[in-house]
Image (cartoon, rainbow, N blue to C red; front, side, top):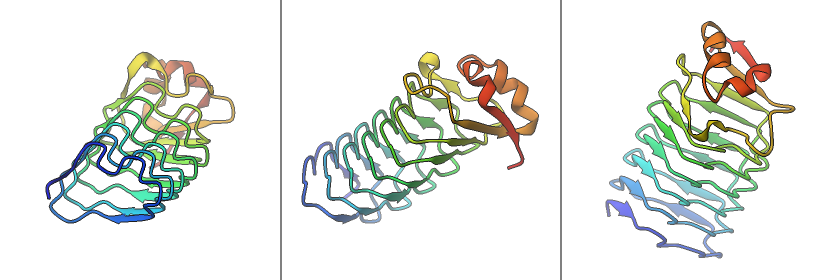
Amino acid sequence: IVSIGESVFNNCTSLASVSIPDGVTSIGGGAFNGCSSLTSINIPDGVTSIGSDAFSGCSGLTSINIPDGVTSIENDAFYQCHNLTSITLPEGLQKIGDAAFISCNNLTTITIPESVTKIGSQAFDFSGIKELYCKPTTPPTISNMNLFHYSGIAGRTIYVPRASVEAYKSAEGWSEYASAIVGYDF
């Protein structure tokens, strides 16, 4: 097996845990969509992409470690993972898709790796994120210039490298969050 196909476990509401075998390189769109009882999943090191809606609606999922080989997390990948409290994004990740973590109500902190160059529109909207640690020295491009479009910036802090504070505050898309941008020593 080299890939988990699109929608292969779609709405398997009794599926509680999954161990993806070594050799798998991609998780297709909607692969585990609606698997509301899924509480744990092991993603092997060989995986390089997580498709759109791959874990959308996995409301039982509380934490997930994404391996170092993953370079893209596509649109809505973790949409409505209401109980997700912890996620580790790997160095080497380049793209976070539109609404990737939208409606992750209990995800309060997330760290964007230095390698990320693009963050999709409303990637963190309606989430519980209070602290966004953004390691890239060059501000990533934000699609449609919104990270928290509807849920706003109130009560949130965006930590960026100290030497890059002014670059973030003046960058397109980031400038609307200037009041929340703070320098940090990573």
